[in-house]
Amino acid sequence: MLPLSDDNPTERTPVVTVAFIVACSLVFLYQSSLGPMTGETFVYRFGAIPSVVFGQASLPPDVVAIPSYATILTSMFLHGSWMHLIGNMLYLWVFGNNIEDIMGHGRFIVFYVTCGILAALSHALTDPTSTVPMVGASGAISGVLGAYLLLFPHARVLLLAPVVGTTYVPAGVVLGFWFVMQLLNGGANLGAQGGGVAFFAHIGGFIAGMLLIGFFKRPEVRFFAPTRARSWRY
Image (cartoon, rainbow, N blue to C red; front, side):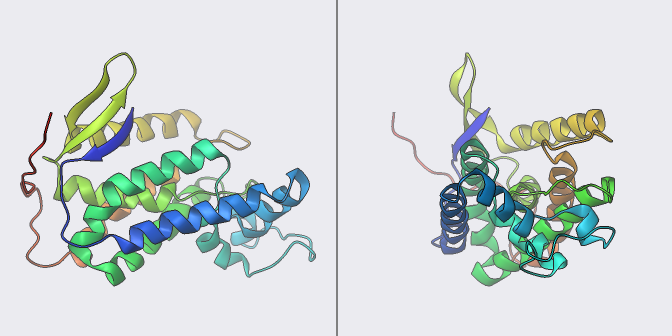
């Protein structure tokens, strides 16, 4: 199921959300232009490798570009494929604008990056000896989803679903189902070797977003608040 939009209007222009989408897209375009071998080196150089981050391994000197701890940040702007990028950016566009709206631009940047860091560490701690680079914005975006669940569970999300087509579903159902699927898949893949989906980054980011939203939202914004109605034309 893919979210296409929600019926939750905003008051602020989501300049930070758009900036993150543009940045991730530009980085992936550059990454794709490098070719297979150089592109792989680029991923190892700027992706977050758990064993390197925790000091249990090191990259060859000619590959190292930044301190290992900084790759936790840079990894948020890398993606493994076009589908990986498009899926992440779609979720960020649908849900990020409302979270930016209730925080303000500056706080949203700090919130997004903090959730991304905690998500990356959540994944890395499940296998600290892993030499597989972690890339993607999904950990930070998961934090946005966790915040959205607590703030706007009654908002309607337009989903594109197999067989059904497009249909509106409450955000609480959409995001609750999404989180349960991350838990199930994370448990099923715990200890698995090799690359794949970093489910525990999703789980860690989502929980971080739920825990942190109270510190970042404007005081007048209530949890579980009804959304402002928007008229729809058919």
